Amino acid sequence: MKVTLGGVMELPLYQTVLLSALILLVLVLPLSVHKVEENLEAFLFVCGAFAVTVTRLWSWHLVQTALVDPIEITLAVFVAGLLFKKFHKALQSLTQKAVRKIGLRSVMAGTVLLLGMTSSVITAIIAALILAEVVVLLPLKRKGRVKLVVYSCFSIGLGAVLTSIGEPLGTIVLSKLKGAPHFADFWFLLEHLGWYVLIFNILLAFLASRIKDIEKEAVPEEKQENADEHSLKSITLRAGKVYLFVMALVLLGDGLKPLAEQTISRLSANALYYINMLSAILDNATLAAIEITPEISTRDLTFLLMSLIVSGGMLIPGNIPNIICASKLKITSKEWALIGVPCGAVLLVVVFAMLHIVL
Image 1 (cartoon, rainbow, N blue to C red):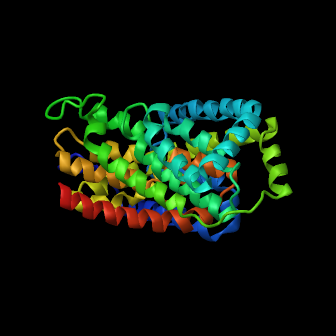
Image 2: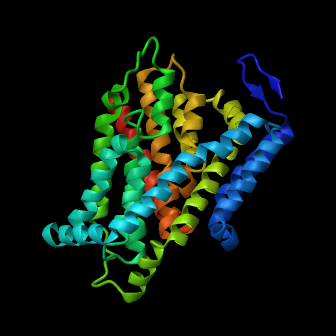
């Protein structure tokens, strides 16, 4: 690599070509090859290791980060699995009462809105774990269940960014902007993004209320499958898959970072808005760390953050809630993309138009 005048590492042509091809494979293969779809965690791990190898960024620090970073999320998934195993019957009873009292459509809309607007406080991980437990208790057909999960994960991703507690993206942004001229405090993102998040979470809740794939009654096979989901073996296996998934994303994010830096340094904020669709396969915190500087205007900051958090819901690797729910509910990459990609694309266009009018 060589350094340009702007301080950005310029990749040799062969590295640029290989990393670009890798991005294409990560986008296409999980949707088109069944074996890859079935072993998504292992596939992404291999891709991440390949990216780091191509860019020659292997280091003991990276290995430590890849091994340690997933631990907190994995423990949360495991402990929550044990808690839900113990209190599953009580949650089932509460959910059934809510459906009888206010109706299924109101429960679906309320789930999307409530988890989305509280995820910045209870964290995106906890919100996703609650979602994964609640959605299986609702009398929905497979397609309707996937739709509800995808809409909810979009909502959780939007809401979680509002504080430094919700997810790493908010922490990185506030850290970068804590000095002049923004002097960002704990409430900074809530003040600047709060109304947009609320509007789009209401929209997502409305979409959830219009889901038509409803079962008249739960089938016995589903009840048996749900019981098995709460076995210790299933809980442990699910936590292990989440660990490998997060480790893979750490490697993939670090391996592709030089290409992202090289590309991003040459683009305007408007172009970056759509380039940020890469956060559908990359950790949005990684892209935010590259794009956001203390000198950024509030307008550009709003554009970039909204594009990052919306894009994160389009594919399973885009956000931790997606990974948790897809693992728990065995949602395939193709199932997610068929709903997440068009939904995300429409949201991106609407957000872009709305921000141009308002800002």
